[in-house]
Length: 178
Image (cartoon, rainbow, N blue to C red; front, side, top):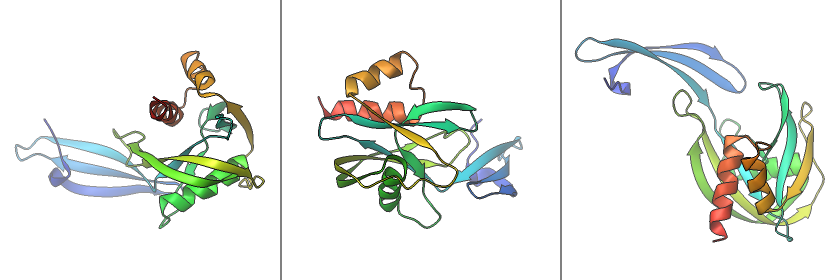
C-alpha cells in the first residue's frame, strides 16, 4: 500500500534541535490502513568538488562523532536557516580547506537519505583556487588531502573513502572529464 502526505491525519514534532528536527506523521489510507512515518527535517547541505590547477581534488580528513572515526570526504557543510546554497558552499570551502575559488558551477542536487530525511545536498565544482587560510568552526579540525581523480577512485574501491556524498561527487567530477 502506498501512503502519501495526503493520507496524513496527524503530525507531531518530537525534537527541534540546532541541526535537525524530528517529526512523526500518522497516516491513514482511504481503506482504513494506518501507519507512521518518522521524518528528519534538515536545512540541507553543500558539497564541494574542488580542483587545484594541477588537477588534484581536495579532500578533508575529519573526525565524525556519529561514526566515532575519522573519514575522508569532500568539503561539505550545512546550509543555515534562510541561507542560499551557493554562499554556504563558498563559506564551507574556505572554512574546511583554507581555499577560495574564483570559478563555481553547480553540478547536482541530491537527497542524502530520502527514506527518512528531507535533506537536499547541493554539489558544486570549484576551480581557480587560492589559499586564504582556514576558518574552522570551534569544534572542527580538518586535514586537507590533495589526490588525483584516479587516486580518489582507488580510495573508493579499497574502502578508504566510504562517504556517499563524496563517492557521488567524485563520480560526477569524473564524468565531466570524459
